[in-house]
Image (cartoon, rainbow, N blue to C red; front, side, top):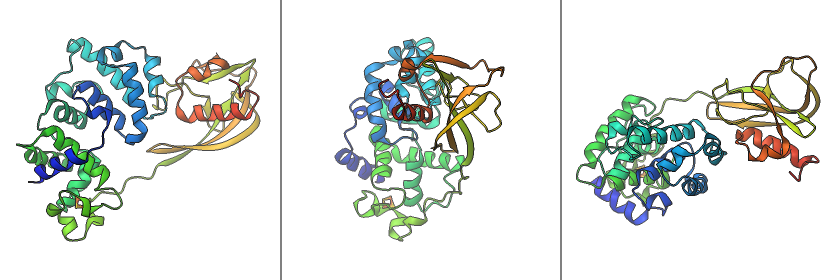
Length: 336
Ligand code: SF4
């Protein structure tokens, strides 16, 4: 019953999104990967540009690394694009360029876990395999007044098994997207809009007025705060950049040299401004300084000079692109 009401509501109320006009598994894959940790209205222009530039698996697999990184620049969580690229190459080599239909084969593709494999299986291939993300857990947590902790994998498994049953005899594609859409548009995080909800007659939290108590989630850790200097080093219109990815973040994207306080390679000439960059798990507090290299200091191999005129064309980590271009705008380099 829930499935029928949900699917009918979805068909009448769904947002018209470009990736919903097709069942092409590559398009569904790209949209699902982009939508992870990113709002739909933020990812849409990226999605449109991506699909124009890399319209199919082959185009993505044959692109060079710089192009795919550049196309993703600004979306964050850069491991996603590397996996998408690696996954396309794997489909070309292991599956003759044809996206596999089998759920277990889909899960072998780099960067595709249980959720994305289930989303592609149900949306693109109409298989009754439930995709369980935060939105879905919130809806089900409220509908059932579920006392299980939604942060636990065992709860995700429980909900997936339950939904697999609910999907039987339904349209898996519209069921999956309906549940996602309901979580995004109606059963929202702080305050659900229950009077508009198509499944309110089945919702225990609504009936008992306890929507704010659900879902149950163990408290997450506060992000840690880290302090760094970011150095802008210019010499004869050459800019010093860094390929140091030892912190595991955004590999492949260039940075400005970023150091802690006791770094001995730089001589700070001027303090410019401070800023911060917030990740899901940490916060960078950044002091931006104009520096020069200390004479005689050892320079790591991951630093290199690039012409300042080529800076804009490079794939940057967002925090440092913002810093560099804010500095250039305020200085004599605004025409670059
Ligand atoms: S009735 Fe309210 S709390 Fe229950 S599923 Fe619908 S929107 Fe969420």
